[in-house]
Image (cartoon, rainbow, N blue to C red; front, side):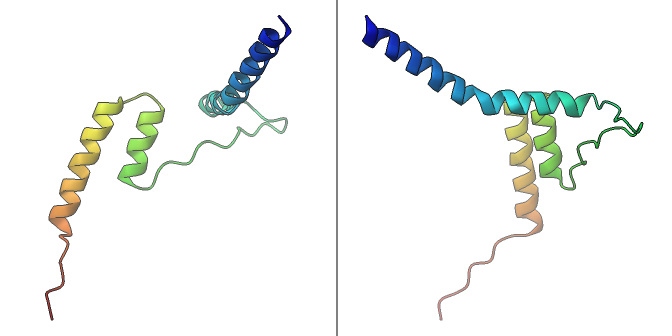
Length: 94
């Protein structure tokens, strides 16, 4: 009976340790979405806007504005556009 309890306690501990970073990220995301006033009346710092299209796509994915397949499709189109604008050149044999 005691080994079963120990194994169950161990598994609960492992699950809790694995979930902790996700819960911290979730709490930080909630704080970023609804900035609270500080004691001096200044709003909390907002998340900076992404400077690149890739960053904007990642932010949209994290904010659930787009889903995974939409993100992949947008990244494919971005890679195609980049390949057209900046094609790779392979050096010739010397």
